[in-house]
Length: 382
Image (cartoon, rainbow, N blue to C red):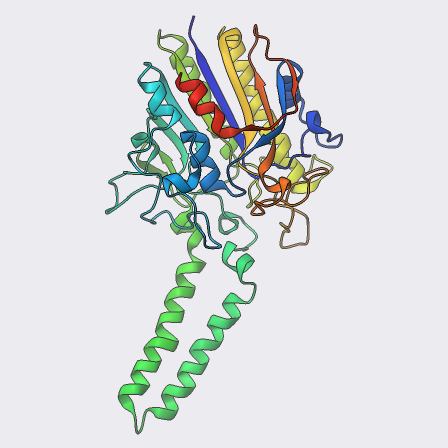
C-alpha cells in the first residue's frame, strides 16, 4: 500500500465560514464530508495571525520567531517577489523530513516564504530547496494589486498614499522654479528628490501586478502577469497529474495544496461567480470546496483513499475588515470569536477551522482541547 498525505490549507478562511463549523449559508459539502468522516479540531491554533510566519511554522513545527520568519514591524509578510528574505535553507520542513523516508513531494498553490537570496534564480528560499520535488503556483501571494478592480495593498495600508505622492512633484517643481535663478544646485537637487524619485516610486507601485503577479512551475516563470481567473482549475489539473503519476509508482507521497482562496484579490471561474449568498467571498469558498472535492474524488478513483491522511486548515483567521472597491465585504466571518487576521491577541486571528480525515482509523468525532498546527511536523517526522 502507498502511504499518502494530503494537506489542504485555505488562505484567510474564517472560523465560521464553512458548514461543519456552523455556517448554514455557504455551500461546502466536500469539506463537510471530510469532517463527517473524520475528526474536527475545534480549538486548532496557528502560530501567527498572518500568512508568512504561520506557514513557516506549519512546515517546520517551530515558532516563526525561531526561524526568522516573524517581525516586530507592522509588515510581517513578503510584499515583493524580489525580496531577498525567506525561510532559511538550514530549516527542516515536513517535505525535507519525508524525503528522508523516500516520499515524493509536491506543493501546488501559494508559497509566500521567499524565493531568491543574492541573485535572480539562485532559488535558495524556493520550495524545491526545502524538500519539494515539484512546485506549481505563486512564489508570493495574490495581493489586491493582482485583481481587476484597480485596488492596491499599498492604498489599503495608506489610503491617501498616491495623493501624497502626487503633491510631492508639484511642490518640488514649484520650489525648483523658485530657486533656479539663484540656487541652481539646490534647485536640481530638490527636483530629483521631490519630482523624479516620487514619480519612479509611483510608477513602480502602479506596475505591481506585473512585477509581483508571477506563476511558476518549479523554478521557471510560466506566466507574468498572473491570470487569476481559472487558477483554481489549473491547481486541480496539476494535482491530478501528480496523483496519477504517483499512483503508478511504489513510493509514498506528500501533496501540499495551499489554496490562494480566499485571500484578496478575490476571483473565481464563471461557474461559481454570483452563485453564493455571500457575494464574491462566498463564491470563492464554494470554488475552493469544489476543488477539494475534485481532488478527493481523484484520490478515491485511484484507489488511494483508505490509505490517505488528509488535513484541512487555514493559515490564519478571516480578514474581517476587508472590503472591496464597491463596498462589498470581502473578508471572512469568525463566528463567535473576537478579532481576525493580523490580530494575534484574539482567537479570531489564530483559531482556525481544521479537520483530519483518515479512513480506517479511530480519528473520528471532535477534539475540543487546544491543538496546534506545529504539532504535525513532529508526528509526521516520526
